[in-house]
Length: 617
Image (cartoon, rainbow, N blue to C red; front, side, top):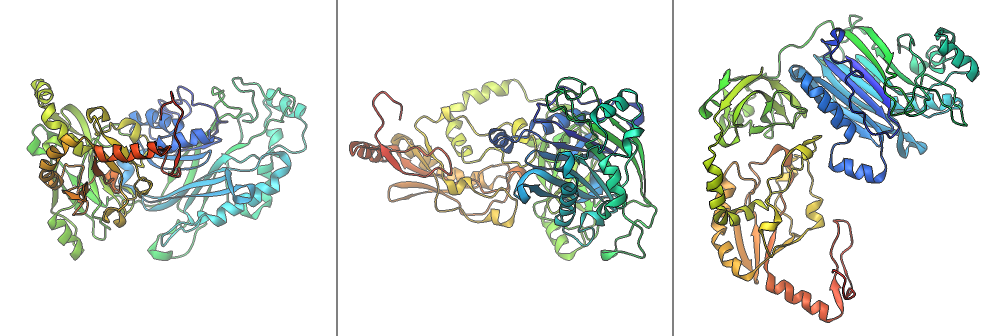
Protein backbone atom coordinates (compact mmCIF):
# COMPACT_ATOMS: atom_id res chain seq x y z
CA UNK A 1 0.00 0.00 0.00
CA UNK A 2 1.38 3.39 -1.03
CA UNK A 3 0.26 6.44 0.95
CA UNK A 4 0.91 10.01 -0.27
CA UNK A 5 0.20 13.32 1.45
CA UNK A 6 0.65 16.76 -0.09
CA UNK A 7 -0.43 20.26 0.84
CA UNK A 8 -0.67 21.71 -2.67
CA UNK A 9 -1.17 25.32 -1.56
CA UNK A 10 -4.02 26.03 -4.07
CA UNK A 11 -1.55 25.41 -6.91
CA UNK A 12 -2.34 23.90 -10.29
CA UNK A 13 -1.26 20.26 -10.72
CA UNK A 14 2.21 19.59 -12.18
CA UNK A 15 2.57 17.87 -15.52
CA UNK A 16 3.78 14.57 -14.11
CA UNK A 17 3.43 12.79 -10.77
CA UNK A 18 4.95 9.45 -11.77
CA UNK A 19 7.92 9.73 -9.41
CA UNK A 20 5.68 10.85 -6.54
CA UNK A 21 3.62 7.67 -6.86
CA UNK A 22 6.77 5.55 -7.22
CA UNK A 23 5.64 4.15 -10.54
CA UNK A 24 8.04 2.53 -13.01
CA UNK A 25 10.32 1.47 -10.17
CA UNK A 26 11.32 -2.12 -9.57
CA UNK A 27 10.69 -2.05 -5.83
CA UNK A 28 7.03 -1.05 -6.19
CA UNK A 29 5.83 -3.22 -9.06
CA UNK A 30 3.73 -5.16 -6.58
CA UNK A 31 1.84 -2.20 -5.13
CA UNK A 32 -1.83 -3.15 -4.79
CA UNK A 33 -3.40 0.05 -3.44
CA UNK A 34 -2.61 3.77 -3.39
CA UNK A 35 -4.12 6.35 -1.01
CA UNK A 36 -3.58 10.02 -1.84
CA UNK A 37 -4.37 12.80 0.63
CA UNK A 38 -4.35 16.42 -0.55
CA UNK A 39 -4.79 19.61 1.45
CA UNK A 40 -5.45 23.21 0.40
CA UNK A 41 -6.79 22.31 -3.03
CA UNK A 42 -8.17 25.49 -4.57
CA UNK A 43 -11.68 25.83 -3.14
CA UNK A 44 -12.64 29.40 -4.03
CA UNK A 45 -16.31 29.72 -4.91
CA UNK A 46 -15.84 29.84 -8.69
CA UNK A 47 -13.47 26.88 -8.55
CA UNK A 48 -15.82 24.86 -6.33
CA UNK A 49 -18.74 25.49 -8.67
CA UNK A 50 -16.68 24.18 -11.57
CA UNK A 51 -15.51 21.18 -9.55
CA UNK A 52 -19.13 20.45 -8.62
CA UNK A 53 -19.91 19.99 -12.32
CA UNK A 54 -16.64 18.42 -13.37
CA UNK A 55 -13.97 16.42 -11.62
CA UNK A 56 -11.28 18.58 -10.05
CA UNK A 57 -7.98 18.77 -11.93
CA UNK A 58 -6.00 16.97 -9.26
CA UNK A 59 -8.26 13.92 -9.28
CA UNK A 60 -8.22 13.92 -13.08
CA UNK A 61 -4.44 13.98 -13.07
CA UNK A 62 -4.08 11.02 -10.71
CA UNK A 63 -6.67 8.98 -12.60
CA UNK A 64 -4.95 9.70 -15.91
CA UNK A 65 -1.56 8.71 -14.54
CA UNK A 66 -2.70 5.58 -12.68
CA UNK A 67 -5.18 4.04 -15.14
CA UNK A 68 -2.44 2.78 -17.52
CA UNK A 69 -1.04 0.87 -14.54
CA UNK A 70 -4.47 -0.79 -14.02
CA UNK A 71 -5.31 1.26 -10.92
CA UNK A 72 -9.01 2.08 -10.53
CA UNK A 73 -10.47 4.81 -8.33
CA UNK A 74 -12.21 2.91 -5.53
CA UNK A 75 -13.52 5.86 -3.54
CA UNK A 76 -13.01 9.59 -3.08
CA UNK A 77 -14.20 12.19 -0.59
CA UNK A 78 -13.74 15.95 -0.51
CA UNK A 79 -14.30 18.61 2.15
CA UNK A 80 -13.48 22.01 0.63
CA UNK A 81 -9.72 21.86 0.02
CA UNK A 82 -9.16 18.47 1.68
CA UNK A 83 -9.37 15.51 -0.72
CA UNK A 84 -8.78 11.79 -0.26
CA UNK A 85 -8.53 9.34 -3.17
CA UNK A 86 -8.12 5.56 -2.85
CA UNK A 87 -7.02 3.48 -5.84
CA UNK A 88 -6.59 -0.28 -6.26
CA UNK A 89 -5.67 -2.73 -9.02
CA UNK A 90 -8.79 -3.75 -10.93
CA UNK A 91 -8.52 -7.42 -9.99
CA UNK A 92 -8.73 -6.52 -6.29
CA UNK A 93 -12.04 -4.68 -6.66
CA UNK A 94 -14.32 -7.65 -5.79
CA UNK A 95 -12.49 -8.00 -2.47
CA UNK A 96 -12.87 -4.33 -1.47
CA UNK A 97 -16.30 -4.10 0.14
CA UNK A 98 -18.22 -2.09 2.74
CA UNK A 99 -16.81 1.17 1.37
CA UNK A 100 -17.86 4.26 3.34
CA UNK A 101 -16.64 7.84 3.63
CA UNK A 102 -16.96 10.54 6.26
CA UNK A 103 -15.70 14.07 6.94
CA UNK A 104 -15.42 16.32 9.98
CA UNK A 105 -15.02 20.10 9.95
CA UNK A 106 -12.96 21.69 12.69
CA UNK A 107 -12.30 25.15 11.24
CA UNK A 108 -14.08 28.10 12.90
CA UNK A 109 -15.38 25.94 15.71
CA UNK A 110 -16.57 23.19 13.41
CA UNK A 111 -18.43 25.35 10.90
CA UNK A 112 -15.71 25.63 8.25
CA UNK A 113 -14.05 22.82 6.33
CA UNK A 114 -10.67 24.38 5.66
CA UNK A 115 -9.44 22.30 8.60
CA UNK A 116 -10.58 18.86 9.67
CA UNK A 117 -10.42 15.31 8.41
CA UNK A 118 -11.84 13.10 5.65
CA UNK A 119 -11.78 9.32 5.67
CA UNK A 120 -12.41 6.29 3.50
CA UNK A 121 -12.98 2.99 5.24
CA UNK A 122 -13.35 -0.39 3.56
CA UNK A 123 -12.97 -4.11 4.01
CA UNK A 124 -9.82 -5.40 2.29
CA UNK A 125 -9.94 -9.19 1.86
CA UNK A 126 -12.18 -9.33 4.92
CA UNK A 127 -10.13 -6.99 7.15
CA UNK A 128 -11.29 -3.49 8.09
CA UNK A 129 -8.90 -0.69 7.07
CA UNK A 130 -9.39 3.08 7.40
CA UNK A 131 -7.53 5.89 5.60
CA UNK A 132 -7.73 9.25 7.41
CA UNK A 133 -6.48 12.46 5.78
CA UNK A 134 -6.30 15.47 8.13
CA UNK A 135 -5.43 19.15 7.97
CA UNK A 136 -4.88 20.38 11.52
CA UNK A 137 -4.43 23.95 12.86
CA UNK A 138 -1.19 25.76 12.02
CA UNK A 139 1.42 27.64 14.10
CA UNK A 140 3.84 26.52 16.80
CA UNK A 141 1.67 27.49 19.78
CA UNK A 142 -1.42 25.54 18.57
CA UNK A 143 -0.23 22.07 19.63
CA UNK A 144 -3.05 21.64 22.15
CA UNK A 145 -5.58 22.73 19.56
CA UNK A 146 -4.23 20.09 17.18
CA UNK A 147 -4.71 17.44 19.85
CA UNK A 148 -8.29 18.55 20.53
CA UNK A 149 -9.16 18.64 16.82
CA UNK A 150 -7.77 15.17 16.24
CA UNK A 151 -9.75 13.85 19.20
CA UNK A 152 -12.86 15.51 17.79
CA UNK A 153 -12.33 13.84 14.41
CA UNK A 154 -11.93 10.43 16.03
CA UNK A 155 -15.08 10.97 18.08
CA UNK A 156 -17.29 12.42 15.34
CA UNK A 157 -16.58 10.01 12.51
CA UNK A 158 -18.83 6.96 12.79
CA UNK A 159 -19.60 4.31 10.19
CA UNK A 160 -22.54 1.99 9.64
CA UNK A 161 -22.39 -1.74 10.03
CA UNK A 162 -21.88 -4.39 12.67
CA UNK A 163 -18.12 -3.90 12.96
CA UNK A 164 -15.61 -1.03 13.02
CA UNK A 165 -18.04 1.80 13.73
CA UNK A 166 -15.30 4.17 14.88
CA UNK A 167 -11.97 4.95 13.27
CA UNK A 168 -9.92 3.23 15.97
CA UNK A 169 -12.16 0.13 15.75
CA UNK A 170 -10.58 -0.81 12.42
CA UNK A 171 -7.94 -3.50 12.19
CA UNK A 172 -5.57 -1.00 10.59
CA UNK A 173 -5.63 2.81 10.43
CA UNK A 174 -3.47 5.01 8.23
CA UNK A 175 -3.37 8.61 9.53
CA UNK A 176 -1.70 11.20 7.33
CA UNK A 177 -1.93 14.77 6.08
CA UNK A 178 -0.70 18.25 6.91
CA UNK A 179 -0.69 17.68 10.67
CA UNK A 180 1.15 20.99 11.20
CA UNK A 181 3.35 19.86 14.12
CA UNK A 182 6.42 22.07 14.53
CA UNK A 183 9.91 21.96 16.08
CA UNK A 184 10.02 23.44 19.57
CA UNK A 185 12.76 25.28 21.50
CA UNK A 186 15.43 25.30 18.78
CA UNK A 187 15.97 28.54 16.88
CA UNK A 188 15.82 28.77 13.11
CA UNK A 189 19.60 29.03 12.68
CA UNK A 190 20.25 25.74 14.46
CA UNK A 191 17.43 24.01 12.57
CA UNK A 192 18.87 25.08 9.23
CA UNK A 193 22.37 24.08 10.35
CA UNK A 194 21.14 20.57 11.24
CA UNK A 195 19.42 20.30 7.86
CA UNK A 196 22.47 21.48 5.91
CA UNK A 197 24.76 19.20 7.94
CA UNK A 198 22.36 16.25 7.54
CA UNK A 199 22.17 15.66 11.30
CA UNK A 200 18.36 15.51 11.37
CA UNK A 201 18.32 13.27 14.43
CA UNK A 202 19.18 16.31 16.55
CA UNK A 203 15.78 17.74 15.64
CA UNK A 204 13.66 14.64 16.30
CA UNK A 205 13.41 15.00 20.07
CA UNK A 206 12.08 18.56 19.70
CA UNK A 207 9.45 17.59 17.14
CA UNK A 208 6.00 18.20 18.63
CA UNK A 209 4.46 15.02 17.19
CA UNK A 210 7.25 12.85 18.57
CA UNK A 211 6.71 14.42 21.96
CA UNK A 212 2.93 14.01 21.73
CA UNK A 213 3.13 10.29 20.84
CA UNK A 214 4.55 9.59 24.28
CA UNK A 215 2.35 12.00 26.25
CA UNK A 216 -1.07 12.15 24.57
CA UNK A 217 -3.35 9.15 25.25
CA UNK A 218 -5.20 9.77 21.96
CA UNK A 219 -2.01 8.96 20.05
CA UNK A 220 -1.21 5.79 21.94
CA UNK A 221 -0.37 2.99 19.51
CA UNK A 222 0.35 5.18 16.46
CA UNK A 223 3.66 4.40 14.77
CA UNK A 224 5.84 6.33 12.34
CA UNK A 225 9.03 5.61 10.47
CA UNK A 226 12.24 7.62 11.04
CA UNK A 227 12.30 11.16 9.65
CA UNK A 228 15.33 10.71 7.42
CA UNK A 229 14.22 13.42 4.99
CA UNK A 230 14.48 17.21 5.43
CA UNK A 231 11.54 19.11 6.91
CA UNK A 232 8.87 19.59 4.25
CA UNK A 233 7.72 23.12 5.20
CA UNK A 234 8.09 26.00 4.42
CA UNK A 235 9.67 26.61 0.99
CA UNK A 236 9.65 29.48 -1.43
CA UNK A 237 7.29 28.40 -4.20
CA UNK A 238 9.16 27.28 -7.29
CA UNK A 239 12.41 26.58 -5.39
CA UNK A 240 14.00 24.23 -2.88
CA UNK A 241 14.90 27.12 -0.57
CA UNK A 242 13.31 27.50 2.82
CA UNK A 243 11.19 30.56 3.55
CA UNK A 244 13.07 33.73 2.74
CA UNK A 245 10.15 36.10 3.32
CA UNK A 246 10.00 38.58 6.16
CA UNK A 247 8.27 36.00 8.39
CA UNK A 248 11.12 33.48 7.93
CA UNK A 249 9.16 30.52 9.26
CA UNK A 250 11.16 27.79 10.94
CA UNK A 251 11.37 24.58 8.86
CA UNK A 252 9.22 21.75 10.22
CA UNK A 253 7.99 18.24 9.43
CA UNK A 254 4.36 19.24 9.04
CA UNK A 255 3.46 16.52 6.52
CA UNK A 256 3.37 13.07 8.13
CA UNK A 257 2.20 9.49 7.62
CA UNK A 258 1.44 7.24 10.61
CA UNK A 259 -0.32 3.93 11.13
CA UNK A 260 -1.94 2.02 13.97
CA UNK A 261 -2.75 -1.68 14.33
CA UNK A 262 -5.76 -2.60 16.44
CA UNK A 263 -4.69 -4.28 19.69
CA UNK A 264 -5.39 -8.04 19.88
CA UNK A 265 -8.71 -9.13 21.29
CA UNK A 266 -10.12 -12.43 22.43
CA UNK A 267 -12.63 -14.54 20.50
CA UNK A 268 -14.89 -13.33 17.71
CA UNK A 269 -15.93 -9.72 17.61
CA UNK A 270 -19.40 -8.43 17.01
CA UNK A 271 -21.09 -9.86 13.94
CA UNK A 272 -18.70 -12.82 13.86
CA UNK A 273 -15.85 -10.60 12.71
CA UNK A 274 -12.43 -12.16 13.15
CA UNK A 275 -10.14 -9.78 15.03
CA UNK A 276 -6.50 -9.25 14.26
CA UNK A 277 -5.27 -11.35 17.23
CA UNK A 278 -1.76 -9.97 16.78
CA UNK A 279 -1.18 -11.65 13.43
CA UNK A 280 -1.61 -8.51 11.32
CA UNK A 281 1.78 -6.95 10.63
CA UNK A 282 2.84 -3.76 8.87
CA UNK A 283 6.33 -3.04 7.55
CA UNK A 284 7.28 0.37 6.20
CA UNK A 285 9.41 -0.09 3.09
CA UNK A 286 9.88 3.58 2.25
CA UNK A 287 9.27 6.97 3.91
CA UNK A 288 10.53 9.99 1.98
CA UNK A 289 9.80 13.44 0.66
CA UNK A 290 10.00 14.54 -2.96
CA UNK A 291 12.05 17.69 -3.38
CA UNK A 292 11.54 17.76 -7.17
CA UNK A 293 8.00 19.18 -6.80
CA UNK A 294 8.07 22.95 -6.31
CA UNK A 295 4.51 24.13 -7.11
CA UNK A 296 3.69 24.46 -3.40
CA UNK A 297 5.39 25.72 -0.24
CA UNK A 298 5.11 22.12 1.05
CA UNK A 299 6.97 19.09 -0.29
CA UNK A 300 4.93 15.92 -0.82
CA UNK A 301 5.63 12.90 1.36
CA UNK A 302 5.18 9.25 0.35
CA UNK A 303 5.37 5.96 2.25
CA UNK A 304 5.13 2.36 1.05
CA UNK A 305 3.84 -0.35 3.39
CA UNK A 306 3.81 -4.13 3.22
CA UNK A 307 0.70 -5.34 5.05
CA UNK A 308 0.52 -9.00 6.08
CA UNK A 309 -2.94 -10.35 6.92
CA UNK A 310 -3.48 -13.65 8.72
CA UNK A 311 -6.11 -14.73 6.22
CA UNK A 312 -8.02 -13.35 3.30
CA UNK A 313 -11.37 -13.75 1.61
CA UNK A 314 -10.42 -15.02 -1.83
CA UNK A 315 -13.82 -15.84 -3.37
CA UNK A 316 -15.74 -12.95 -4.97
CA UNK A 317 -19.40 -12.32 -4.24
CA UNK A 318 -20.20 -12.64 -7.96
CA UNK A 319 -18.39 -14.88 -10.42
CA UNK A 320 -18.67 -13.96 -14.10
CA UNK A 321 -18.09 -16.36 -16.98
CA UNK A 322 -17.46 -15.17 -20.51
CA UNK A 323 -15.92 -16.49 -23.73
CA UNK A 324 -12.26 -15.71 -24.46
CA UNK A 325 -13.25 -13.66 -27.52
CA UNK A 326 -16.32 -11.99 -28.93
CA UNK A 327 -16.01 -12.03 -32.70
CA UNK A 328 -19.77 -12.12 -33.38
CA UNK A 329 -22.58 -10.24 -31.60
CA UNK A 330 -24.32 -13.47 -30.60
CA UNK A 331 -21.26 -14.39 -28.53
CA UNK A 332 -21.86 -11.45 -26.17
CA UNK A 333 -23.47 -13.66 -23.55
CA UNK A 334 -22.52 -13.19 -19.89
CA UNK A 335 -23.17 -15.93 -17.34
CA UNK A 336 -22.74 -15.23 -13.67
CA UNK A 337 -23.49 -16.72 -10.28
CA UNK A 338 -23.77 -15.06 -6.90
CA UNK A 339 -22.66 -16.25 -3.51
CA UNK A 340 -25.33 -17.29 -1.04
CA UNK A 341 -26.29 -14.29 1.07
CA UNK A 342 -25.22 -11.72 -1.51
CA UNK A 343 -27.53 -8.70 -1.18
CA UNK A 344 -28.72 -8.23 -4.73
CA UNK A 345 -30.53 -5.14 -6.00
CA UNK A 346 -32.72 -4.59 -9.04
CA UNK A 347 -30.41 -1.69 -9.87
CA UNK A 348 -27.32 -3.90 -10.20
CA UNK A 349 -25.70 -3.91 -13.62
CA UNK A 350 -22.84 -5.48 -15.54
CA UNK A 351 -20.48 -3.03 -17.20
CA UNK A 352 -18.21 -3.61 -20.17
CA UNK A 353 -14.93 -1.78 -19.54
CA UNK A 354 -11.99 -1.12 -21.78
CA UNK A 355 -8.72 -2.27 -20.21
CA UNK A 356 -7.30 0.81 -18.48
CA UNK A 357 -10.64 2.21 -17.28
CA UNK A 358 -10.49 4.86 -14.56
CA UNK A 359 -13.40 4.18 -12.19
CA UNK A 360 -16.47 1.90 -11.90
CA UNK A 361 -18.71 4.26 -13.91
CA UNK A 362 -16.19 4.54 -16.76
CA UNK A 363 -17.80 1.79 -18.83
CA UNK A 364 -18.22 1.41 -22.57
CA UNK A 365 -21.58 -0.31 -22.32
CA UNK A 366 -23.75 -1.98 -19.70
CA UNK A 367 -26.67 -4.35 -19.26
CA UNK A 368 -29.00 -4.64 -16.29
CA UNK A 369 -28.21 -7.69 -14.18
CA UNK A 370 -31.79 -8.82 -13.74
CA UNK A 371 -34.10 -11.35 -15.30
CA UNK A 372 -37.29 -13.22 -14.45
CA UNK A 373 -35.26 -16.19 -13.26
CA UNK A 374 -33.04 -13.87 -11.24
CA UNK A 375 -36.02 -12.23 -9.50
CA UNK A 376 -37.48 -15.61 -8.52
CA UNK A 377 -34.02 -16.68 -7.39
CA UNK A 378 -33.76 -13.54 -5.27
CA UNK A 379 -37.06 -14.28 -3.56
CA UNK A 380 -35.96 -17.79 -2.66
CA UNK A 381 -32.49 -16.65 -1.53
CA UNK A 382 -30.93 -19.29 -3.75
CA UNK A 383 -28.95 -17.02 -6.07
CA UNK A 384 -26.02 -19.28 -6.70
CA UNK A 385 -25.93 -20.10 -10.41
CA UNK A 386 -27.69 -20.15 -13.72
CA UNK A 387 -28.12 -16.44 -14.45
CA UNK A 388 -27.19 -14.87 -17.74
CA UNK A 389 -27.61 -11.64 -19.69
CA UNK A 390 -26.70 -10.60 -23.20
CA UNK A 391 -25.34 -7.37 -24.65
CA UNK A 392 -27.20 -6.04 -27.66
CA UNK A 393 -25.32 -5.66 -30.93
CA UNK A 394 -25.78 -1.90 -30.88
CA UNK A 395 -24.13 -1.58 -27.47
CA UNK A 396 -20.97 -3.49 -28.38
CA UNK A 397 -17.80 -1.60 -29.33
CA UNK A 398 -16.64 -2.08 -32.90
CA UNK A 399 -13.08 -2.95 -33.85
CA UNK A 400 -10.46 -4.82 -31.85
CA UNK A 401 -9.55 -4.32 -28.20
CA UNK A 402 -9.21 -5.82 -24.74
CA UNK A 403 -12.12 -5.49 -22.34
CA UNK A 404 -13.20 -6.48 -18.83
CA UNK A 405 -16.64 -7.24 -17.45
CA UNK A 406 -17.57 -6.06 -13.96
CA UNK A 407 -20.67 -6.67 -11.85
CA UNK A 408 -21.60 -3.42 -10.08
CA UNK A 409 -23.55 -3.79 -6.83
CA UNK A 410 -25.77 -0.80 -6.19
CA UNK A 411 -26.22 -1.84 -2.56
CA UNK A 412 -22.52 -1.62 -1.74
CA UNK A 413 -21.65 0.94 -4.48
CA UNK A 414 -18.75 -1.23 -5.55
CA UNK A 415 -17.77 -3.86 -8.07
CA UNK A 416 -18.55 -7.33 -6.72
CA UNK A 417 -17.02 -9.39 -9.53
CA UNK A 418 -14.71 -8.96 -12.53
CA UNK A 419 -13.38 -11.08 -15.36
CA UNK A 420 -9.94 -11.44 -16.76
CA UNK A 421 -9.30 -9.32 -19.89
CA UNK A 422 -10.81 -10.80 -23.05
CA UNK A 423 -10.79 -9.82 -26.72
CA UNK A 424 -13.58 -8.18 -28.70
CA UNK A 425 -13.10 -8.29 -32.48
CA UNK A 426 -16.19 -6.99 -34.23
CA UNK A 427 -16.23 -5.49 -37.74
CA UNK A 428 -16.62 -1.76 -37.90
CA UNK A 429 -19.79 -0.33 -39.40
CA UNK A 430 -19.72 0.20 -43.16
CA UNK A 431 -18.75 3.57 -44.46
CA UNK A 432 -21.95 3.74 -46.47
CA UNK A 433 -23.97 3.98 -43.29
CA UNK A 434 -22.95 7.62 -42.85
CA UNK A 435 -24.44 8.61 -46.17
CA UNK A 436 -27.59 6.68 -45.33
CA UNK A 437 -27.89 8.47 -42.03
CA UNK A 438 -27.42 11.87 -43.62
CA UNK A 439 -29.97 11.15 -46.34
CA UNK A 440 -32.52 10.15 -43.73
CA UNK A 441 -31.82 13.02 -41.40
CA UNK A 442 -34.96 14.87 -42.37
CA UNK A 443 -37.17 11.94 -41.45
CA UNK A 444 -35.27 11.28 -38.24
CA UNK A 445 -35.24 14.87 -37.07
CA UNK A 446 -38.59 14.63 -35.35
CA UNK A 447 -37.58 11.34 -33.73
CA UNK A 448 -34.54 13.08 -32.30
CA UNK A 449 -36.91 15.62 -30.79
CA UNK A 450 -37.87 12.84 -28.41
CA UNK A 451 -34.22 12.36 -27.56
CA UNK A 452 -34.30 15.93 -26.32
CA UNK A 453 -36.40 14.62 -23.46
CA UNK A 454 -33.41 12.64 -22.20
CA UNK A 455 -30.97 14.54 -20.00
CA UNK A 456 -27.26 14.70 -20.37
CA UNK A 457 -25.24 12.37 -18.19
CA UNK A 458 -25.90 13.07 -14.53
CA UNK A 459 -23.26 10.64 -13.38
CA UNK A 460 -21.90 11.39 -9.95
CA UNK A 461 -18.79 9.49 -10.95
CA UNK A 462 -15.58 11.47 -11.42
CA UNK A 463 -14.52 12.47 -14.87
CA UNK A 464 -17.48 10.99 -16.65
CA UNK A 465 -19.09 14.23 -17.62
CA UNK A 466 -15.93 15.35 -19.35
CA UNK A 467 -15.42 12.11 -21.22
CA UNK A 468 -19.02 11.15 -21.95
CA UNK A 469 -20.49 12.70 -25.06
CA UNK A 470 -24.02 13.98 -24.72
CA UNK A 471 -26.53 12.08 -26.81
CA UNK A 472 -28.90 15.02 -26.92
CA UNK A 473 -29.16 16.65 -30.37
CA UNK A 474 -28.06 20.20 -30.76
CA UNK A 475 -30.80 22.76 -30.31
CA UNK A 476 -29.93 24.25 -33.68
CA UNK A 477 -31.96 21.48 -35.32
CA UNK A 478 -35.18 22.62 -33.69
CA UNK A 479 -36.02 26.05 -34.99
CA UNK A 480 -38.70 27.73 -32.92
CA UNK A 481 -38.13 25.72 -29.71
CA UNK A 482 -38.21 27.70 -26.48
CA UNK A 483 -37.23 25.81 -23.33
CA UNK A 484 -38.49 26.92 -19.92
CA UNK A 485 -36.60 25.09 -17.15
CA UNK A 486 -38.34 24.32 -13.89
CA UNK A 487 -36.57 24.62 -10.56
CA UNK A 488 -38.44 21.59 -9.31
CA UNK A 489 -37.18 19.47 -12.18
CA UNK A 490 -33.64 20.77 -11.83
CA UNK A 491 -33.68 19.80 -8.18
CA UNK A 492 -34.61 16.19 -8.92
CA UNK A 493 -32.62 13.70 -6.92
CA UNK A 494 -29.79 11.97 -8.77
CA UNK A 495 -29.80 9.11 -6.33
CA UNK A 496 -30.73 5.62 -7.62
CA UNK A 497 -33.29 5.38 -4.81
CA UNK A 498 -36.79 3.92 -5.13
CA UNK A 499 -38.14 7.47 -5.10
CA UNK A 500 -36.62 7.96 -8.52
CA UNK A 501 -39.33 5.73 -9.94
CA UNK A 502 -42.13 8.04 -8.82
CA UNK A 503 -44.47 9.73 -11.26
CA UNK A 504 -43.55 13.02 -12.85
CA UNK A 505 -44.13 16.33 -11.07
CA UNK A 506 -46.92 18.57 -12.18
CA UNK A 507 -44.78 21.65 -12.39
CA UNK A 508 -43.10 20.91 -15.70
CA UNK A 509 -41.22 23.11 -18.19
CA UNK A 510 -42.66 24.28 -21.47
CA UNK A 511 -41.59 23.83 -25.09
CA UNK A 512 -43.15 26.05 -27.75
CA UNK A 513 -43.39 24.67 -31.29
CA UNK A 514 -44.43 26.42 -34.50
CA UNK A 515 -48.13 25.82 -35.23
CA UNK A 516 -47.47 23.98 -38.48
CA UNK A 517 -45.36 21.35 -36.72
CA UNK A 518 -48.06 20.28 -34.26
CA UNK A 519 -49.81 18.04 -36.73
CA UNK A 520 -46.66 16.13 -37.39
CA UNK A 521 -45.93 15.76 -33.65
CA UNK A 522 -49.47 14.49 -33.10
CA UNK A 523 -48.71 11.71 -35.58
CA UNK A 524 -45.57 10.96 -33.66
CA UNK A 525 -47.38 10.48 -30.36
CA UNK A 526 -47.90 6.77 -30.99
CA UNK A 527 -44.19 6.35 -31.73
CA UNK A 528 -43.42 7.77 -28.30
CA UNK A 529 -45.05 4.79 -26.63
CA UNK A 530 -43.19 2.38 -28.88
CA UNK A 531 -39.88 4.11 -28.13
CA UNK A 532 -40.53 3.80 -24.43
CA UNK A 533 -40.84 0.03 -24.71
CA UNK A 534 -37.36 -0.27 -26.20
CA UNK A 535 -34.68 -1.12 -23.62
CA UNK A 536 -32.24 1.16 -25.43
CA UNK A 537 -34.56 4.13 -25.39
CA UNK A 538 -33.50 6.95 -23.10
CA UNK A 539 -37.06 8.29 -22.87
CA UNK A 540 -40.03 6.75 -21.11
CA UNK A 541 -42.78 9.08 -22.32
CA UNK A 542 -45.76 7.45 -23.95
CA UNK A 543 -48.58 9.83 -24.82
CA UNK A 544 -49.12 13.32 -26.13
CA UNK A 545 -52.50 14.74 -25.12
CA UNK A 546 -54.24 18.03 -25.84
CA UNK A 547 -55.64 19.73 -22.78
CA UNK A 548 -57.27 23.12 -23.28
CA UNK A 549 -55.14 23.89 -26.29
CA UNK A 550 -51.94 22.79 -24.53
CA UNK A 551 -50.10 19.77 -25.81
CA UNK A 552 -48.71 17.83 -22.87
CA UNK A 553 -46.22 15.00 -22.93
CA UNK A 554 -47.00 12.67 -20.03
CA UNK A 555 -45.58 9.48 -18.54
CA UNK A 556 -47.87 6.51 -17.91
CA UNK A 557 -45.30 4.07 -16.64
CA UNK A 558 -42.20 4.09 -14.46
CA UNK A 559 -38.67 4.10 -15.72
CA UNK A 560 -37.71 0.49 -16.42
CA UNK A 561 -34.55 0.89 -18.42
CA UNK A 562 -32.26 3.72 -17.41
CA UNK A 563 -28.59 4.44 -17.71
CA UNK A 564 -26.92 3.70 -14.35
CA UNK A 565 -25.36 7.14 -14.59
CA UNK A 566 -28.83 8.72 -14.99
CA UNK A 567 -30.93 7.05 -12.32
CA UNK A 568 -32.69 10.27 -11.37
CA UNK A 569 -35.98 11.33 -12.91
CA UNK A 570 -35.93 12.42 -16.53
CA UNK A 571 -37.35 15.91 -17.12
CA UNK A 572 -40.91 16.28 -18.35
CA UNK A 573 -41.88 18.74 -21.07
CA UNK A 574 -45.02 20.64 -22.00
CA UNK A 575 -45.68 21.63 -25.62
CA UNK A 576 -47.60 24.78 -26.54
CA UNK A 577 -48.34 26.48 -29.82
CA UNK A 578 -45.83 29.27 -30.22
CA UNK A 579 -48.56 31.65 -31.37
CA UNK A 580 -50.18 31.52 -27.91
CA UNK A 581 -46.92 32.12 -26.09
CA UNK A 582 -45.96 35.03 -28.33
CA UNK A 583 -49.42 36.51 -27.90
CA UNK A 584 -49.11 36.52 -24.12
CA UNK A 585 -45.62 37.96 -24.33
CA UNK A 586 -46.82 40.74 -26.67
CA UNK A 587 -49.63 41.62 -24.23
CA UNK A 588 -47.10 41.93 -21.41
CA UNK A 589 -44.90 44.14 -23.58
CA UNK A 590 -47.85 46.41 -24.43
CA UNK A 591 -48.46 46.95 -20.72
CA UNK A 592 -44.91 48.20 -20.29
CA UNK A 593 -43.50 45.07 -18.68
CA UNK A 594 -41.30 42.45 -20.18
CA UNK A 595 -41.14 38.89 -18.81
CA UNK A 596 -37.88 38.31 -16.96
CA UNK A 597 -35.72 35.48 -18.17
CA UNK A 598 -35.08 33.02 -15.38
CA UNK A 599 -31.32 32.69 -15.21
CA UNK A 600 -31.10 29.75 -12.81
CA UNK A 601 -33.19 27.31 -10.86
CA UNK A 602 -32.81 29.44 -7.74
CA UNK A 603 -33.34 32.89 -9.24
CA UNK A 604 -36.79 34.31 -8.35
CA UNK A 605 -39.33 34.56 -11.15
CA UNK A 606 -41.00 37.84 -11.87
CA UNK A 607 -41.33 40.75 -14.30
CA UNK A 608 -39.59 44.03 -14.67
CA UNK A 609 -39.75 47.19 -16.72
CA UNK A 610 -39.35 46.91 -20.46
CA UNK A 611 -35.71 47.02 -21.53
CA UNK A 612 -34.38 50.12 -23.19
CA UNK A 613 -34.38 50.29 -26.95
CA UNK A 614 -31.24 48.96 -28.57
CA UNK A 615 -30.64 46.44 -25.81
CA UNK A 616 -31.15 42.70 -26.20
CA UNK A 617 -34.05 41.40 -24.03
